[in-house]
Image 1 (cartoon, rainbow, N blue to C red):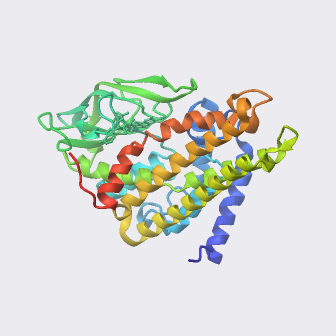
Image 2 (cartoon, rainbow, N blue to C red):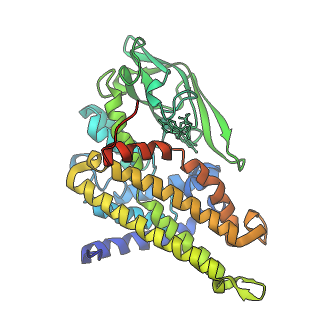
Image 3 (cartoon, rainbow, N blue to C red):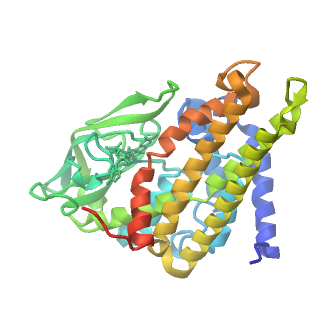
Length: 399
Ligand SMILES: Cc1cc2nc3c(=O)[nH]c(=O)nc-3n(C[C@H](O)[C@H](O)[C@H](O)COP(=O)(O)OP(=O)(O)OC[C@H]3O[C@@H](n4cnc5c(N)ncnc54)[C@H](O)[C@@H]3O)c2cc1C
C-alpha cells in the first residue's frame, strides 16, 4: 500500500504547516504544551484558543469538510486527516473539539434547515465554543439512564438536573445537552438533544479539580433553566439516535497518534542526551527495547487512523464505528504506555513537574496523570472493547 500524499495533498499540508509554525509563536507561556490543559486550565490559554479559532475561521479551515451551502468546500476526509495531523503535530488549539468535532457534524446530520443556517456559521467563524452535557453522577457508561429533565412549558423547555465531568464548561459559551423530555420514559426512549447558551439564568458551573489540581472539568447544575423550543435538535424524544451519531464523531480522531509521535521524539532526544552511570540512556538495551516498542505502536496507530479515514470514506461514520473504538482504545492506552515508560526511564526526575531538574519540561508526569482520564472519557475503554466484540467481531451481546 502506498501512503504517499499526492502533490496537491502535499501542498495543502505545507500550507497548513506554514500557518501553524508562524502562529504558534504567539502562544502564551500559560498555554504550555497545549491539549485540554493548555486550552481550559487558564484564561490566557483559552484566549489563545479563541484567537486561533478566529484565524482558522477566517481561512475557512474549521468548516472545510462541510457542504458548500453551509460554508464548507466538501473537502475529502483524507484532507481533514492531514489537517488534524498538522494541528496535532504543532499541539495547536483553535479547533473546538466539542463544537467543531462533535456538534457541527451532528447538526449536519440531524438539525432542521433553520438551525443549520443559524448555528453552523458562528462555529465556522470560530466564534462559538461548546461543552458536552451528557454524563451525570449516575449515568456515564449507562448514559441512557440519565435523569435530567426537560419539561415542555409553552414554547420553551424547562431543564432541571445535573451534569458532571463537563470538560471546559467554565469557558464554553454553549452546551449541547441530552435530557429526558418524556418523564414516563425509561432508557433511551424519551430523550432529546438541545443547544443552549451557558449564560442562561439557572445554570451553575462548579469546578471538579483534577488529581493535578488543574481546573478542566466541572459539575453543571440546572435549576429551572428555560431553553427555547427552537433549540431542540431533531424530533422530540428521539435524541438517542442522534447521540449515537455524535459518539462516533467523538471517537474517530486521528491526531492522538501524531501527538504520540511528537512525544516519542522528545523521549528519544532525552535518552540520547542524558547519561546514567557514565553512559547515555540510549545505549541501555532495556531503554532501546522499550522505545522501539513504542515506535512500533505509533506506526500501527497511524496506520489504523488512515484505515478509519478510508472506511469512513467508503461507508460513512457508522460503518467505521468498530474501528473508531479500536483507535480510541489503542490511542489512549498508547499515551499511557508512553507516559509510564518515560517516567520509568527518568527515575525520580520523572516525578518533577515544575523544576529546573524536570526532564522535558515536566511533561511526562503531566501526561501520566492526564492519561488516566483519557481511558474513561468518550466512553470508557471497557465499553469500547465491548463494542469491538459486538459490532466488530459479532460476538454475543450480554445484557
Ligand atoms: C477526564 C474526563 C472528562 C470527561 N468529560 C466529559 C464531558 O465533557 N462531557 C460528558 O458528558 N462527560 C464527560 N466525562 C464523563 C465520561 O463520559 C464518563 O466518566 C464515562 O462515560 C464513564 O462513566 P462513569 O464515570 O459513570 O463510570 P461508570 O459507568 O460507573 O463505570 C465504572 C467502571 O465500570 C466499567 N463498566 C461500566 N459498564 C460496563 C460494562 N457494561 N462492561 C464492562 N465494564 C463496564 C467502566 O469501564 C468503568 O471502569 C468525562 C470523564 C472524564 C474522566
